[in-house]
Amino acid sequence: MARALDRYPKPELLIQIIMSETIKKAANKSVGKSIRILRHQHGWSQEDIASRLGISIPAFSKIETGVTDVNLSRLEQIANIYEVSVVQLLTVDGEQAELVPSHLNVIQKKLTDREGEIANLQRKVIELYEELRNKSSIAV
Image (cartoon, rainbow, N blue to C red; front, side, top):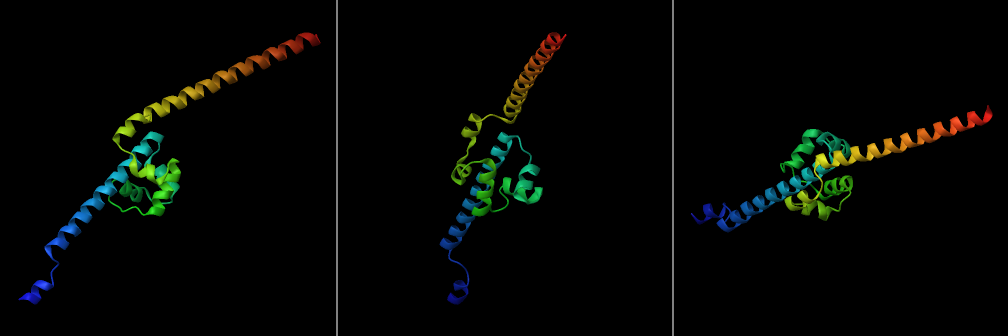
């Protein structure tokens, strides 16, 4: 009878295994959430990041949802894409996400920047037109 019981793991070991798996799943979900938050903050699609990583969109989706374990090498690649450290990637949380501009704010800033560029180009066109007009009136 004692031999039959020896074949099965002790309850303490089973609890450790279950806790380890639970912690691992929670960590994967947390890292995935951080990656998703950063992707949204940059206004990028899953396809954009998957392409930069050289993996399929479903593979990247599994990283974001915490289904797949992410090794250190992959975390370094992702951190480099977002221009953050691996530590920052692992510690992004909801409070930080609210402090960083949302996807809409990023687009709005890009639009404002482009409008400024257009205004500068319009000024240059007007200056060149005035310069050309002044040169042609002097030549006459």
